[in-house]
Length: 399
Image (tube, rainbow, N blue to C red; front, side, top):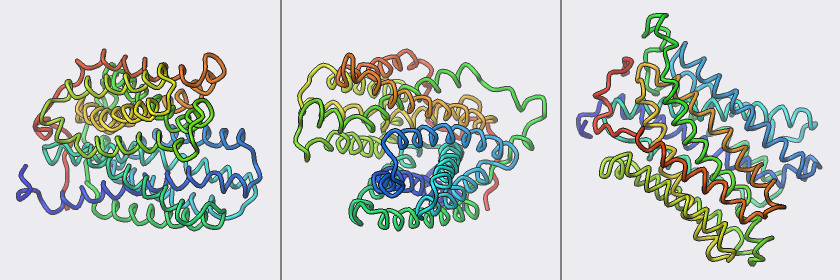
């Protein structure tokens, strides 16, 4: 579909999905970068913070299930708007001084909204991509990454105090609410599964494909969580890097994630999904292996940068491929594939941390290296469709 022939309503829906991804990235970044200030305000230790983060991951899995339930009954637009509103409710509660029980409960609610948006944004993104007839998911995920970087810089600029963190969190809540309103008004309106399919066909899902693509997502998030959680610690504590060098591993990682997401849609069209997946998985596995086997700060930063190719390329490509397994059930498929996200995040953060004592934090990065190398076995399942709209799916009702 050429740019000139795209209906105005479809262009608006693309804008709504981009806004949702941006709000998601911004809100999450503001939360995680505000954790030191919130930790001091609540007077809790690192163990409690770790439990909060684990709780958010588990709540996000429940949010993905919620997105599926809502999307099946009312469509993915409703699920996405709901997830954004849930975040908008939770963030101000996190922002203001409250007893710890209320603070923890707000984190749990935020996690539900996070998972709901994760799944529903991918549902809407796949639907818009299918309607356009060309690859768009890389650009959607790039919006989330760019907004996450902006959110981290925002917290850095306003200084790491509880008051400043509260202001940033309240701002993120306002943006999430605004994005939810935009999605509700101009998001893509699909016919829900409950209306589109006979009752006997609603549960006929491509389960083998869900497991294959789910395990790819799991492998990517093992690497993503390992780098996000441990890259700075490894550089500073294990390799004795200077204080200003230690954060560069994560900065290099996120930079590569953003750049590769910006070009992924074009690369899929140019070289095909299978070749792109093989290259991305191989490059990122090598990057993690470099971190594990060459204990030098420069090598570690370079390795973390190469690892970013996996999150940059494989996440949008995998969700796009999963959405095409059975377009009639794409929302249900994506919600289930998204669940592997949180399992991978927990494994990457927890298991790599447990390996820090023996054999050591550096060699522990062989775990994500092996996980990413295993993605190569899934490459044959990644088919390339140059016209995503050529696959019949549920009907779309433009405004």
